[in-house]
Image (cartoon, rainbow, N blue to C red; front, side, top):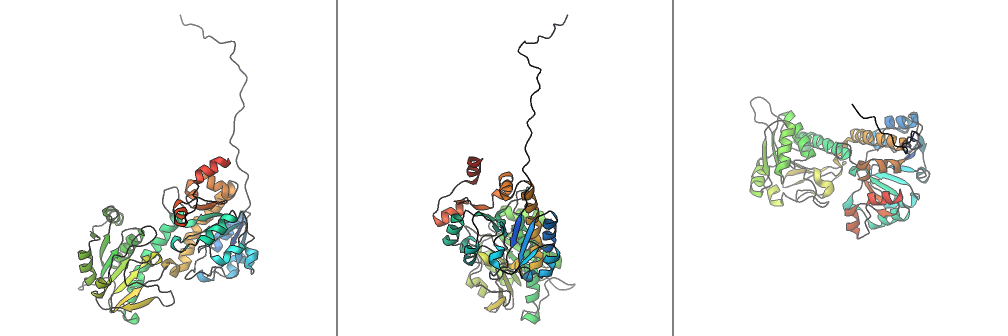
Length: 403
């Protein structure tokens, strides 16, 4: 016979209150998009299509006159999307959130407002202490969009720009191999009965991978060098075919450069600077009319003979080898690059509005936190703090102490 259940006199049948998570109140954003004056910068961080989505969600967007010209977006395109066209830069900087496609310049420091949010790329080798000091003094929340991570753990904007640069580098090489640009008159690719052009790629990252894809697609012979066997293996797996790969061994590299029609430099920087792996002697032994595309130029370049060029005058010759050394190569196809950046930033702005503003999305999204380098008077990026000998504060600790 089973025992009856024992019920303690202290047992209470009074229902407990259910604790519910309080959803932050939706916040209306005021976003400003300035016109960039930085060298080689033709991109715009939000396209008219993205602005239309944000305006229809109830947000205010101000666009400086001519901000989209470099990407062939007119003021009328933005006006029809619902943006306010502003002719005074100081008026534009009254927006609570500023989104830029170029790093913050010294000229813009006086326009920044206290407690403003600034979303832009950073270029660590060119960053100045004066800019950091002003951001700290004005308690700016500064987010580097090239350091933002997505839910998959990758850097979506950096990856997009790298994909563009890899594809575009092959198109540039194909152009400058032709007679019209004083190349050697070689078709980049192969036709029946003739051996294909030889493309050498230094760097097996995203740029190298997409350059290899494009070159293979045209029928070129591709050889890839990198100082990481893992990256070489990953590239072969990603493109789905076996190809010539080698570690960066100088003798082998020099021999292959001697026979190459195109050499593309796409090495990853080390401590912010790209290592020089191709010496002047190696370049002097390359074929006359061959082409060097140094995609790494914005971090110093990996060819010893490289020097800065512009989109207006992109090439020079040394040892009869054509050098293309334009930094920010993705800006050469600025409309595509702008759309890629906008596709990342627009959803982030929507998320920010839904959870109480940019500060809310910083708290809730670890990938966004990775991009924050200045937060209300504190430097929250360790490499930047070390570079300038300033105090570093862990952002996670800072946020937990404020909650």
